[in-house]
Image 1 (cartoon, rainbow, N blue to C red):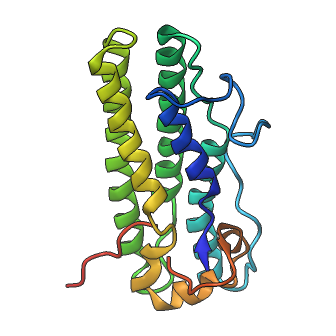
Image 2 (image 1 turned 120 degrees about the vertical axis):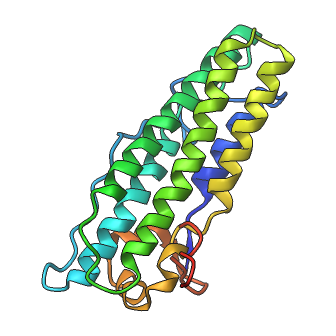
Image 3 (image 1 turned 180 degrees about the horizontal axis):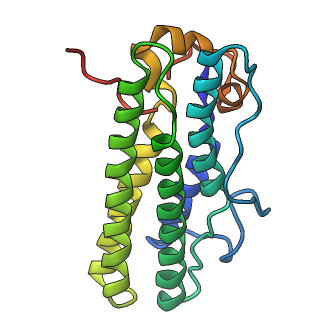
Length: 209
């Protein structure tokens, strides 16, 4: 199973709008509909703490997916509107990453070996991406519309989005076999994947001792 990436692809296209592509008006998402913020994980069997923990881990990532699906798209009708809506989009992404980090940091101690290391790896990965998106937003806000600095800021934001798009959203649990197995029975993890390939659990696996 592989994570669903259609949302990421659509958002990366939105970043490309400011660099010369066409986009949707601000306020619409990649699918043309509005999606609420802050996904709640689907219920997992309470009798299995490993499935419950994996379900909560995946729930943090589902929230980020929904944030990205609901992000405003860049309005290219003028340099000013393009810069303003791009800044709004990046601000929304920063907020989604902040919520993901809160949810990851709020996970209880892992019931199986490797889970806590996977959580730390995920937090480190998303923190780095969040900081790069925030820096790009600040650079864009301080640059004039249509300036070279503004274009560089959008390129930097696009690179950060590419990092998310290329990440295997479930890879962090690869070093925790019991949790990786539990994720196959966790409904929220299942919603992140599609059948047809081997499962792997976002972020690089934690380093081995």
